[in-house]
Length: 484
Image (cartoon, rainbow, N blue to C red; front, side, top):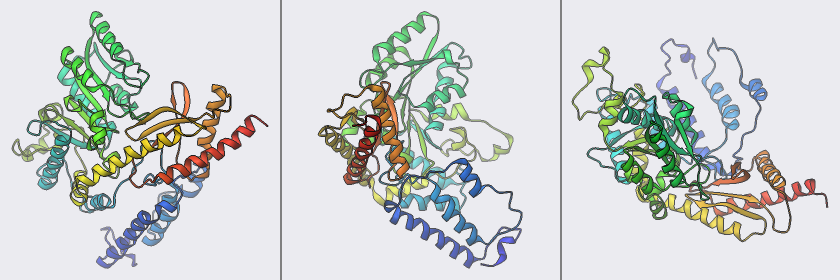
């Protein structure tokens, strides 16, 4: 490659751009083809990363291929492979190649997706794909609307800012908001960001199935009203991160209607399960929400970052977020030409809709339905496998492709402290091996192992071989803990 990268215009020649691009595409394709044979876990300390990557500002140019090779040899290998079939923890990110290329197009053409005047096609495509999602979730297509965001955290924040304006106006000093002890932490963060104090937040305990306790919710609302406070919003979970649990959506909807409360559903994880028959039954009542968060970069198989907020009335967003600075006065357009910077917090927005559009067009919705159904069925099969073993105990059954269990052999009489120690150690050993990403969570004050199986490329053999490996580690740990 020539030294054209030294040019102050930051340009490469046509041939240089093509060859550089082909090289990167080759790397990405190789990743998709070989990722299953790699180890999904990256382990490194801050000191190790500093010694490898820390450097001063590069004042002078370096050959482009040297920079690319350094990235591919030292940066990419030191990142977890969240698309790996043995990436079982948190919420995996099993994206697809079409969407990756769509992101490349959106970034390569650097399309500004904030306003209609900047890109009518980008704005229209966001309307089109938003309408697809409104239809999937039973929201009104004519009045309803939404916005693509960086993720569920920003979608939840956008929803709560909107709810606060519509239900509380400018004075929310006496407002109270309700969510369960299993609700995602992004909701608490959003509540704090928009100015609510700790004493305005009601964390409602969950029942034995980890669903919000309806009677305790009703009691809390009644108590707050008697004390002269202003209940204004209930946040329900449609697929909690810990257990995949869905709160009783229809009962909560009824409470919200009776009490005149905003009904927000955080379906960032589980919302996409509506495309399966089993998921649709669990999510009954989701269409009754005033606002709904879903994350296409989770179970709609899109690359990061892509969250989404749906609302029953698109005017709720525009009336909450529209500002009229002088420099935008010439590009407002008519009411049908939506400026999405008026529907959320961001003014500058990337063209997120393109990847969902292209992947749905390419694979078809039926393929997405099959992938989601496969994940739910695989998790139920895993539960059945675990229940047939004398070594494992189910602590939370398969729900929306999440299952929790712990090592608790029936021929051993182990204390809760010992069980916690063993299960934590199993997770540490499997991660240290880098063969699978499998971490613990806490349920009912017990350390348990959690599997999230939304990756359609995860086979049952991937699951059983990992469990077998865990059993081997458990035997080693038991020998250390209880010498024979």
